[in-house]
Image (cartoon, rainbow, N blue to C red; front, side, top):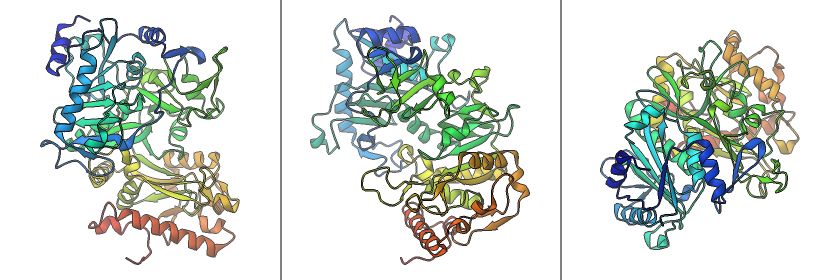
Length: 543
C-alpha cells in the first residue's frame, strides 16, 4: 500500500510496517489471502471456515482500561473494567508495535477502515490493524463498510492494533491474569490485543468504546436487537441474555430487522452500531432459524465449526471444538432487513421495549407491563436463569444477573444507562414489557414445560400491535408486575404462574427465593435510589 496519508497516520502511532500492508481488501482477496496463508478453507455454501486457536470465546478477565486523566473519573471500575497503569500499557504497546515493524518483507499486514454506528452524527471512524487476513474479513463483515469516497480522507478516531501472536510473558510481574491482554487507552484512543485470535474481542471492543463515548453525549448505547414494521414505523427493541430468544423473536417475516445485537438511541430515533451479524451456530436448524442458516454463504465467515474434510459439510450439532461456534455475515445476507432494502440501519423511536428472560424457577409471569421505575430496576438487574442439567453440578435453577443485559461491555456505571433509558421512554412515551420465555407451572426438575414458542410469539404480537393494552391488568403480589388478565390466543391459566402450579406453597417459596436473589443482587449497584429500589420485589429480607 502506497497511500501517504495512511502511512503518515501510522507513523504518528510509531508504526512503520516493513512487510506488505493491505487496506480494505475485497472479500474475494481476503478469502484468498486466508487460504494462501493456510488459515482458512472454503466450506458450507462458499463460506470461509477458520479456527480461532486456543481461545474460542472472549477473555473477560484479560480486559483492562488504562487509568488516565481523561477517563478515570467516568469509568465503572471493577471486575468488568480492570485498572492497568500507563507504564504497563506503554511496555506492551511497544511490544505490539515492534511485532508489526519487524516483519519480513514477505509478511503481510491488513487494515480495515470503517465505522461503528450507522448514524451520520454519531458514527465512530475506526481502524483495525491485524496480521490475520480473516480477522480483517471479520471486521469487513461486522463494522460499517465505507464508500470509496470516504476512504480518501479517512481519519480514524479509534484504533485497534491486533497483534494476536504476541503474548505478555511478564503478566505475573504486571499483576495481570494471563499472557493474553486486551487493553484500552481512551485518552490515546487506542486498544491493543495480544495472545488471542478470537475475533469477537474486536467487535465487543468497539462496543465497549461506544458504551463509553455515546452516553456521555446523551445517547443510550444498548445490547439489544431491533426491528420495525414494513412502513418503517412502530420500531421495537428486544433486550435479553443468551438463551432468552432475543435473536429468534426479533427475526420476524413481517417486520424488517434493523440489527441483532448493538444499537444506539439518539434524539432522532434508534440506529444500529454494526454492518453485520455474529450469530451462534451450535445446533443451528434451518427449520427454526432459516435466516441465519441461509446467511451462511459466500461472504460469510464460520468460526470453529466441525466439518468433513472431504465434503466440507458442516456438522452444526458438533460442539467438540466449542459450544460457541459462530458465523459473521454482512446485514445484506438477511433478506428481510432494513439494510437489504437499501436504507440506513435506523428507525423512529421505539414504541415498544421488551425485556426477555428465561426464568427456570417458573415463577415469573410469561408477560407483564412495567412502570418506568420498574423498567430501570429490571434493566439494571438483567435477569435470566440457567437450567438444571445444562452444566455438570447444576441440579436446580441458577439465577444470572447481567446489568443492562450486557454487563461485560459496560464502561460506565449501570445507573447511567438506566437513567438514559428512563429519559428516553418517558420522552417518547414508550411502553416497556417483561416477557418470560422460560418455564410455567414449575421448574424443569418438576417436569414443567417451557412457555411454547407459539404462545410467546402471540404475546410479542399483542405487544407490538397494541392489543395487549385492551386487557385489564392485575398486580402480582411479590414482584409487583402488572399482568394482563386475558390475551387473545393465550390460555388464561398460564398468564398467572401461581395458578399453573399444583403445589401453591412451593410456588410461594420459590417466588420468595427468586425475589430475594433480585434484592441482594440489586444492592451491588444501587443503594440510595429509593424510587428505583421500591420498584423491585415486595418482600422484606433480613439485612
